[in-house]
Image: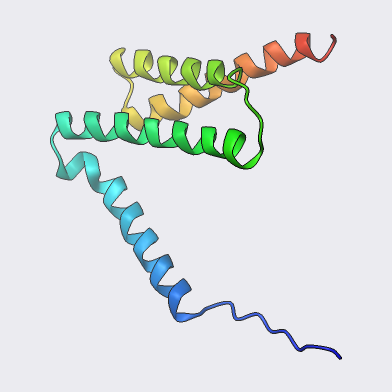
Amino acid sequence: MTASYSVQRWTRRSIVSTAIIGALQILLLAGPFIFSANVVDQLTTLFVYVILAITWNALAGYGGLVSVGQQVFFGFGAYAAIRLSQAGLPVYAALALGGVVSAGLALLVSSFMLQL
């Protein structure tokens, strides 16, 4: 007995989900122009914590891995982004450069750790 399976790429649910996600992305990109600086600061803090929670859920919840070593790179990238933003760099550029700085630290640390 064989069953026939088919994959529908664009169902009603996926179209609605894609539209909602697209609208949220546009709202997030327009956030600094719509909201005050205080609201943008609070939303940035909120989303940083949301990303941290998602990372923790993926590692400990789904993967069963209880490790906090990766938080060093998360924190270092966030710290670098904040310091660069305070130095006068635009927020989006500071976030991108903070990620690059964190990746650089990860490469430096991994070169030593992989030799153990």
